[in-house]
Length: 176
Image (cartoon, rainbow, N blue to C red):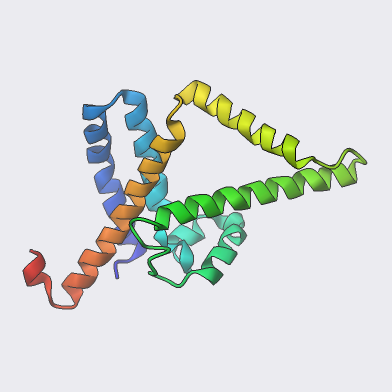
């Protein structure tokens, strides 16, 4: 299995080719969003969040957000490293955790300030409003485009794991 430094080097090495490839088939904004999300997917939002890793350590004081994820998924399972479900589960998990933490903070502020306890419908409308603002600046498909970038970053990690493991087991002849 490659080290965190190897994964980081591959991510940085692929950044310019990813940008240029996307820019050759899409506009500059799409290329920029995919490239930034590719970097995020490779450096802090990748498959190794299921173990103590460089990616996990980069979350610093926010590592606690990934403890349930680490507990639930075994390392290199199809649910964490899988090309199809890995990134999707991390995005859904992170969106859920972010929503829960935001709600708890809103609830705490309301209790502390003797304000109104947040209504779930109002809370959902606020998230929708934030999404509308992001889409108004970055385009209607920005969340799909961002997911593609995250997926490519995570896929480069998973494919690197597969190739390096294949080479280390002595069966590189068939691969190369």
